[in-house]
Amino acid sequence: GIGIMNIMMVSVTERTREIGIRKALGATFQNIMMQFLIESVVIGVVGGLLGIACGVGVALAIAKSGLFQTVITAAPIIISFTFSVGIGLFFGIYPARKAAKLDPIEALRYE
Image 1 (cartoon, rainbow, N blue to C red):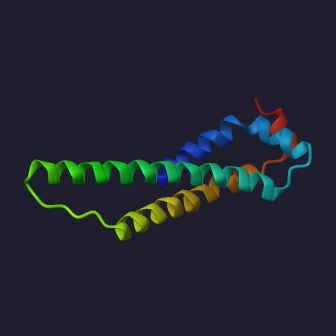
Image 2 (image 1 turned 120 degrees about the horizontal axis):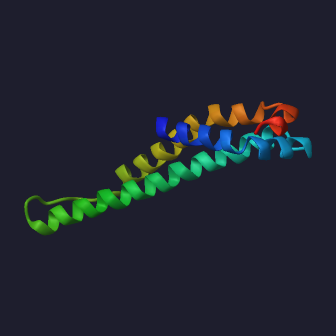
């Protein structure tokens, strides 16, 4: 979660000028919030899918080696994916609010 928030904060800082232009052209608070929340949720989705793929791969490798018998069920996969998306959403709120609250004049002046 902290990694997602740091990535999003860097994204907001790097795109300050773009945010200022969008706000000057009429983008609302909700438009900017939605843009950055979608980005943070996408990061959570990608992380969740990679985590599921790694977990299933490791479980299959352990089962194939014969050391243990593994069982892969849908419930833990769904719960972990939902948790990953929720973390992306929750930790993306602060950077999204920071971006949406930028003053367009200050953002355009930012270099």
